[in-house]
Length: 80
Image (cartoon, rainbow, N blue to C red; front, side):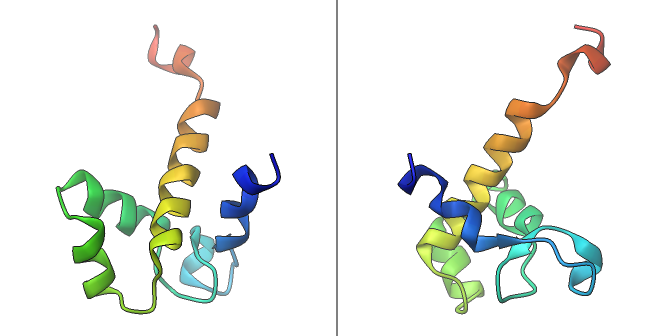
């Protein structure tokens, strides 16, 4: 289980960095940009080329963060 949560160390939300939006730790790259790029069809390799300060594990951490956020989302607010 400890390894499953290693991704959490790669995400930070600091009010002084990018308005407190969740970013890859040590960078100003928001999780939302990474997840949006994947949703738009960009490959991991394309993202790594665009953001050379990132590692593959950072992208995986961003996706895990998004998955956790969705798991906690209350679908009742959509009336389902």
